[in-house]
Image (cartoon, rainbow, N blue to C red; front, side, top):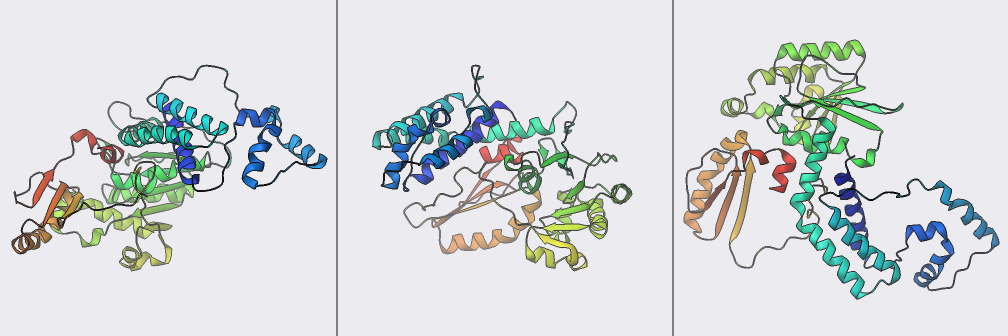
Length: 384
């Protein structure tokens, strides 16, 4: 992983460990000191246990056998390269180091300030995530292509066939496949490659078709033949009800032949992942191999997703509606009701429309915002 991504992971682990343990009995111990002389940590541990704990000879021998400096994996022996989060890391490190000496008000206040500065940089965190995804999958000139990656024995190789735009995969591909399957918690158990359908299937153990990524029936037949011949299970990931799309939505999303291809791969798949039980029920023909995989908020991008939200004081209600052009007809369906609501409760609400349509008819209750073209890829959009 890149240095910036490593710093981001470290910051998230350390900041959340500090924040979420403040109401609990705790002790901060310097790792270097623990490895060199674990007995130096005993006074602090005894304090939170509210008793004097002195290990006997057998316990001491067991601890000595377990905490061996020679077994330490990493020992810094060179200056740390600079990066976009270096200053924040150093600030948090100083705050955590202070906790090893005393866990008091002043020490916590300094660490809180460092944590708050980190939270204020949510846009930078998303930029780091976006850069790491780009690094993993590669972006040579002329298109989005995965970089070849070596794998170890026992590693599952997953290849994702997804629709790609100028900014990379669709948001749903990031949310449901790319970010979860490349999560650091998986280590080297899973490696992922991602590309649009090119007629070539790279070496893989599992192939996942994301939504209506295949351009036509010929592509669907070719992929099914390749996976069957190689014995590669084919999974289809579906989080939208394409069967309910209107002619206008199909045209806006340029789905046309893609829906025929989707039906073909659904019929030939080994498993189908649906985002909801209701969506799975709409596809009775594959219900015997349906698996519900709900969408979820990724805390690596949506930094404040667990924090309680308090509405502004007053009686004005705020609505937010956002989406791509395929949702323009949906908004047109509810718009007359919003107009009627305004006539009934003028000044009592407003609606912010993000994306959805190139232009929207002005209304006193409506604010229309278009994301900049370079912020429409999912991680960039979150940061924006």
